[in-house]
Length: 101
Image 1 (cartoon, rainbow, N blue to C red):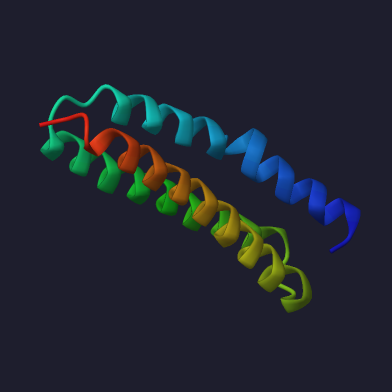
Image 2: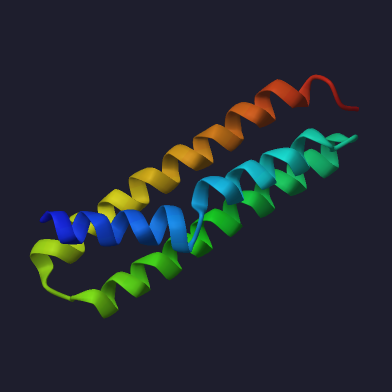
């Protein structure tokens, strides 16, 4: 990817959509859960939120340029980054699940 495209991708993911901030907000909600049902629901909801925003970012990438040489690697980059955020939510879930009833 070219520098301009990398900058565009960075801006979308970190500045426009603030994906890590969304993940941290979801983590906060998960940490406040008091029952296993709440924790399960918040994990499911949180992952849906992240992946829905990931889809929105990918749609925005289509607007930037639909050339395959940029779009496909950029989509994979967004998917991989979102997967890492989702895995972070799984870690929080594993830590918290033994402390709720």
